[in-house]
Image 1: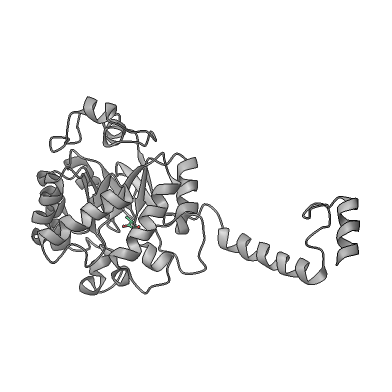
Image 2: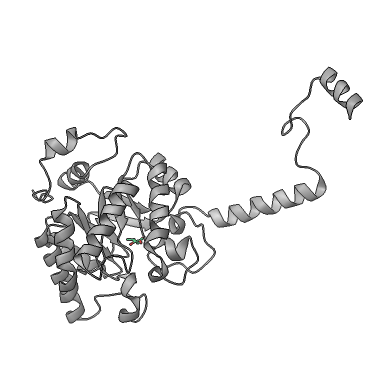
Length: 302
Ligand code: KIV
C-alpha cells in the first residue's frame, strides 16, 4: 500500500494529538484518505462566505488559491495579485472554515527572489493566515531549493504542475499541457522531483487523462486533478466555477453544480421591482412595532 511521506514532519500520532482546538482536518487525515483509496475533495474558496459553504459541505481541503485574482477581484491574471491582498483573503477564508485542511498558494512575486523572501512569505501566511500548508506552482529545478527550504521549516508543501497559471506568458496562454512527448516527460519528471524532495501532494492541471493516470500510478503521494480526468487521487475546482457565480466563459473541465449568477441576478431584479412598486418592505413582516403610548407621547413632542 502506498503512503504519503510524512518523514519531513512529525509522527502521525503526534499530528493527531497536536493542539487543534477547532478540529480542522490535518495532514494525517489527508494521508488516511489516500491510503484507504478514498478520493480527496478539494475546493478553492476566496472569502468568508464561500469558505463557510466549503466548511458546511465538509470538503477535505480548502485551497486559498491565487485564482481569486481573476475570479473574485477582477484582475486579468493571477500575477497582478500582491501578497498583502492575498493575505487579506487568506485570513477571511480561515475565519470561515474550521473543518477543512487549509492550504494557501504562494502568489507570484512572493517567493522567487530568494530563499529569505520565500520563508518570510510562508511565515506571514502561517502566523497571520493560520494556514496548514503551502502550494507552489512548478516543479522545475529553480523551484526545488525553495520547496526544500519551506519543508525544512515544518510547513507541508503541495506541488502544482501542468498548466501553471503564473507562467501563462511562457506557456502561451491557458492551454492543455502534455501534448508532446517532451512536454509529457517534463511534467512527469517534475512530479518525480517534487515527490523526491517531500511534497505531500501534487495538483495536476489541464493535462490528458492518460498522463495523469500514469503519474498517479507511479507516485506514492496523492495527485489532485483539475482538468486531468478521473484517474487522480482527488479533484479540485474553484468555488465560483462550480457554483456558477460568474457570467463568463468556463474551461471545458469545469462542471457547474449550481447557477448562482443567474439566481442572484433574478433575486436582485425582483428586489428592485418590489422596492419600486412598494411591495418591499412589508409593514409587519419586515418592520418593527412601537407601543401606542410611546408613539402618542413622541408625536406630542415632535
Ligand atoms: O489558484 C487556484 O485556485 C488553483 C487551483 C485551480 C488548483 O491553483
